[in-house]
Image 1 (spheres, rainbow, N blue to C red):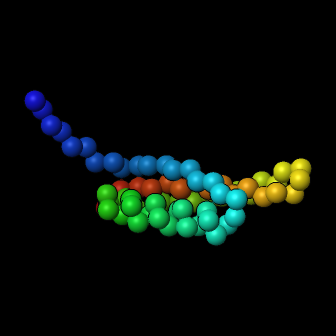
Image 2: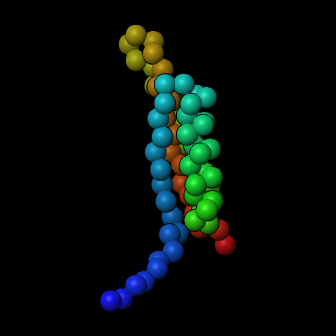
Length: 68
């Protein structure tokens, strides 16, 4: 039986929430988790969508890269 480990070099994660505070909390929790596997935030992109009833939806894409 062969056992090989591979280093994750890039990881992209998507987040969504109904308010900005919750979105930020989700992202921060995942940042801490990814630190344990030696990934750091490379970039963050976010958007706000407002539906026809005026309700806001917050989304974010976070790109993690291996620490060098």
